[in-house]
Length: 249
Ligand SMILES: [Zn+2]
Image (tube, rainbow, N blue to C red; front, top):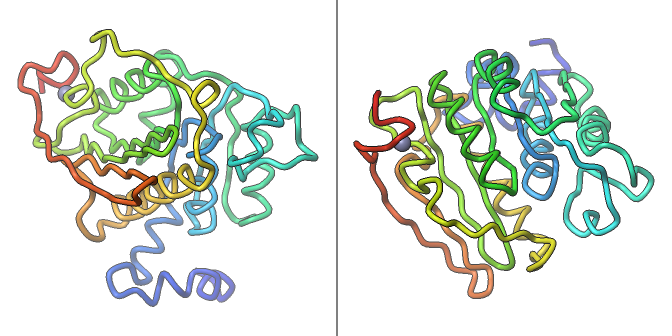
């Protein structure tokens, strides 16, 4: 690290558990962030500001006026831009040292096969079950940690699937596919703007903890927030030995 980096990251380096070594791990880390919307905005911003060296930001949408209430990667001037490009632009302003690649695409299984093996961690900041399950399958196959968040109306949740470990449950253990799950979206039900900030920031915190090996990540625990009462609660869960995705491990 050069003098400017020692200064830029001083408040992390001052943390005993992180230190120079932990900050160096962040600088060398490669992270895939899927979704450059409400959750991806704070998650990507904090990871870029924290010096995560390589970020792939994936989203197939364009910036719309109704996004600007909560998706702080984007600005009025960038309406109509691909969100991944708009996000890359913002992250470069936050921290020009970070290499950011924009993937203007909905990542299918084939593309995930190309990207996931080369990253250290994946953040699920998406809004649909199909992509969530595709990300989980890729992370199980390549044993990558997956930090997953969701937020709608006043309710948010976060959990970490550390698939490097045999003991860790996967997303499918907790939310099995094809159970007639009804897809609900912020477009039809609304979402409190700072809720996505809280949940996306929590995802960034968990990602930094996993990348640096600091603390105890949310593995086997689903952390839920009800923003109406501003109460958090935690649901413990375990691996499903019959899980169709990770049961063979
Ligand atoms: Zn599983």
